[in-house]
Length: 316
Image (cartoon, rainbow, N blue to C red; front, side, top):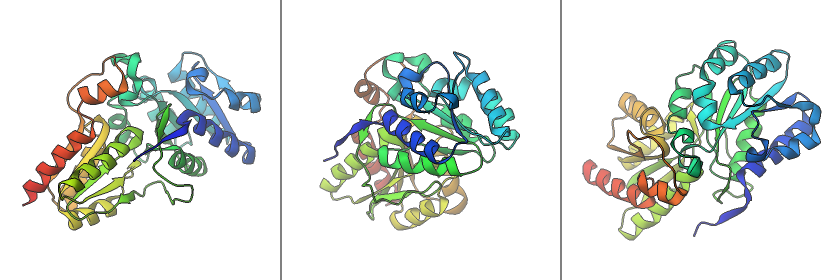
């Protein structure tokens, strides 16, 4: 039975940033007037001289972050994922990535986790936008342990990164001693009949629940946390395509140009394999609880189970 963490993801993010900033005076934080929502006030209290609130001017925030990076700083720029992706895209593309700088862009409330902020603030397309930027690293932690590891690695990696950050409590997926590395997927559960490849705090737990449901039907499902969508761990995808012969991808995002597309590209080029994609299909967001929205957009363990049964039949 999966348990919820007692710590919110945003609190773990801020705690990790403070620890990193204690060790490296070049780490700075930029906010777009959302410090209360993103929970980064403790960073400002500890490092007021390294905290910059640019106001509701997200594109400018990324420009300022690029300037700070050019002077040797390591800027973490933070806003809602809808703004981090859609509103800042040109500045992030040109001023940060094209310029080969070192900006760490963080988008909170990805997909259905935007809940009552509704369709205008519900990004189902942010990974799709970010995947097309050359050399950009795109990742989404599924719990507080993976968040700590991945943020720390991103801070020490020279180059731009984009992280999707769930703000609230997440399920406990990893123990403290787990090995987690950017660009390398983690096998959370082994199995020989089908592989469930999931990403993020919403869909990794659902994939694990689906594997439990499938086991009751005699189908053994492997579950992979593909926290880094770009660069994708193609070697692991191919290995499990060969092992199980059937794959289901699970993402809190459009199935277009997200995790499902990334996996499909690898399979098409290296190991054609029956594939089903669980994700949002040609829809905008709407207002609701996370539970309602997961049902509304078919982002549930039951949907994953159904698609897994179908893909296992297809490989036969």
